[in-house]
Image 1: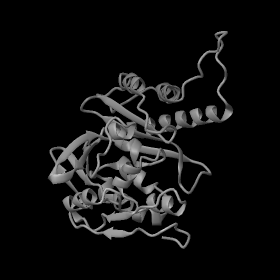
Image 2: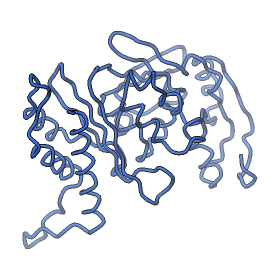
Image 3: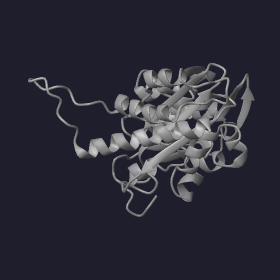
Length: 297
């Protein structure tokens, strides 16, 4: 903690297994789990959070790596951004590696974890649109050794929340063995913080395109109609060829779906969007266009 932190935690527990961590949380309902602490310590230092106790997760080796399982990668929630940014991981899930490398300065990448990015659910979390586009699922550890699996999109949308004493243990990601792209635009809101981001993955087996837009809403947005429309225009049997005009049209389609026009007024006219919103829409369109172009090339 920094010198201006409001108050140190009363107790710190350092379990060595996931079940021990769950048991510690169950025994101390007011305790807060912490891994990298990049979001937690910012909240503590700003006075937004005063945890009565901490359950440290850094000594749990089982969640700090990954393994292959039935055509999927099972990623430990304790994987750091720095680890996911390395070449061996990039060969496995390129878009997630690109997002990890873009997750801020080195000290943030060295400390911040995949599970923390998901649990904090900050709209600007770089991993979130990638996980949404990949349709990843979470394996949640609960009391008594219980495990349950939920789509990551359900947690981010608030459809299914973590229950008392539960922790994100692993993230199950399908291995598509196909091009994936993550792009983001940054502004003056902080070092490396996105004002808009786009994750795009191809699924040649299903002849599909998956796209998720991050940072512009409380959760990543999936423009499903735009995905289905552009997938029909791709020549999957001829090097995934597509006419250049379709790239621009796809970008506009995605942007309009995620940032729609204002509702008509009482007289039926549609008021123009504010300049800042129009600029954001153009940014999303450019990111989506470039992401699809890079994936198809």
